[in-house]
Image (tube, rainbow over all chains, first blue to last red; front, side, top):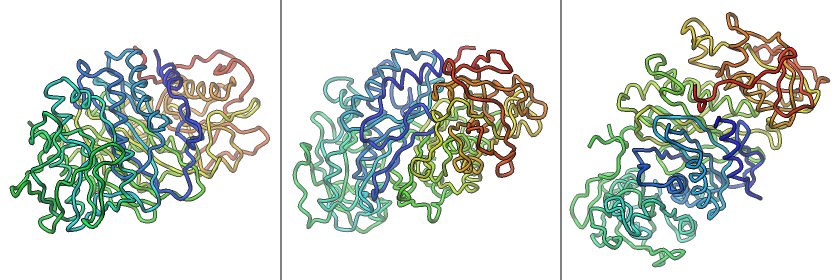
Length: 301
Length: 301
């Protein structure tokens, strides 16, 4: 199969959505998109690479497609936004079959359909290891993006869902935890409610609570105290909950005066600590220093 | 160097541009961009992969940075648009040094500054081979994007510049042709003039004239007749001009009644043929069938 035929197959698998503002999709030099007037745009890009983010012996093609898009959607959720279009760059490895590519797009489109996202373009080439880079464009009300740098001293810190499922799944390769590792659920509906509830900052947990909350603290020039009573995923340890990557839950802050419900769109919300003045980025877990260690692809083991 | 330090270095190398509509750049989950009201948005993504698009023995880090962005900018040019923001996803190979990354961004920013493009985000990870995926967002007047599917029967076909320089450079590794291979110049200024001149379709020449014009013909459901008197780059053969990829010149069509000048923003423009009814995608060169062969990364040699 040559490049032209492959693009033709992908185009057939990804029909343009109606009413999404897509003027020209797959098949031209760029996607042409007519944005909704008055909104701010969100743009994010994330790799999914064989041997780094997945092993082909373990994850199906559909799992890979789902997760590639989930990573991008979770970034849109982290800003409180609404995703609309995705571009998919894919570099095929020597082992990649046409069936694999078809199933990859089927998995990706399954998640795309749930969140009304249209695949609007991309790039195809080859590589030694299968490499996908997903681009997601979304929108958010003007000036309403939930940033990492908006937390204030005294704000309460919350997380959605439970922590540690993804790394528990990765380490045990079984049960619902493994399913959650393979097909994470981006918290888009939950995130969209946060602005109205008075959240001051938000990010998604892709590299683990310790690493990601450290980053949020750095951007907000604050420190944070975390309770030991974290919402653990059933069977997950405190270590897995604190340093395990890829949960794709949200961590967010809000003034203590704001009433944050116990659940948002069917997902539990737990208050886990408080922002305070201090050395920017410093984290304390139940009174002990918490070192920001998590998933870092560049770390030498 | 860990992920956080690397992102810090990249952030220092890529300061946000003034007046570009960038609300939040590197350091958050998404780039937040306030678009100019009324325009259509253009979005494109392109890989640059070690061993596929460049060899590290041959191309400097700065060359790679330049070319990664040039590929994206050329896609924006192909639609007649104006680039504004770029996202850079980069997966570092085991051999990659901090100095290499710094020089990569310096080369990229050199071209970015010329075209007033701001790096607004991206992703960093690792891979076996150095892999970059560039995302460029641009804008174009509402409904004014130059598409591939707008050519009409009887339109004249034009190209900017000369053809064959890039593959000549790749094959000889010397002189200005090699420099053009390493640091192509996206035809943004030229492309922005095309809409007013009455161009009906346009694309950039990344995979060679035969392959790319074939694609334009397919999208426009037309055939094309090409003259043998093509504007060859000095020293390039007809084969190199017709099947050589990466010239990043523009091929465009316009009704014969429109006066197209001999040069646009200092770059020559040559009429090379005519669109006609026929088998969609069929090309004839001086009366002989021209097989659409060019750079195809998926082709088995």
